[in-house]
Length: 112
Length: 110
Image 1: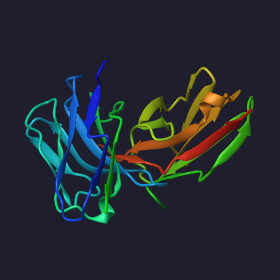
Image 2: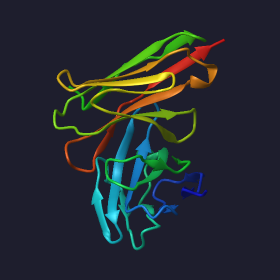
Image 3: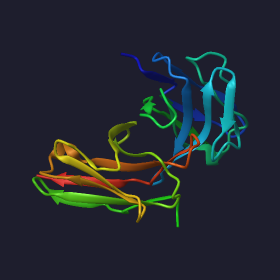
């Protein structure tokens, strides 16, 4: 019963460093998403994908990049980390675009 | 008006109380509506979808009012385990954009 798996769960970065948050799902969902959640705020969509090879920007894409080479994997790349990217990142997938979202457990990122 | 706006909370209620949350949305073309539950430091999980006719799942009742553009969640006979943040989620028209409200924190006290 893996569902959506995210790694790492926690990470501390220095300003200017880069890293990739990994996300994989085993439900054969075409739709995958990356959200960030700041304290007291709703989830904001960073990027989404409607299938392998197809990605698009969400509300807050600046400073991030994604790729979708397979149905299962949807990594999120942070380039030149900034303190404003300190947040909790959630990967999610769904069977249909307006269906139930299945979330990973989240990745807590701190940029110092 | 913000895209999705929820009661700011927090709500503190005793066990057994009935509590209601409201959520308004700005896009009249929104098609799908949901309530998610998020426990402290955990991922959100679907609580229930909200249908035009209203729907009930045990102690939980969700209602949709398209004319006034709001949805509601009613929890009856609150349990300690209902303590969580409740997130209102609305699709924006026919695209893939799901917009989350900021959430309403509920604490049920013994």
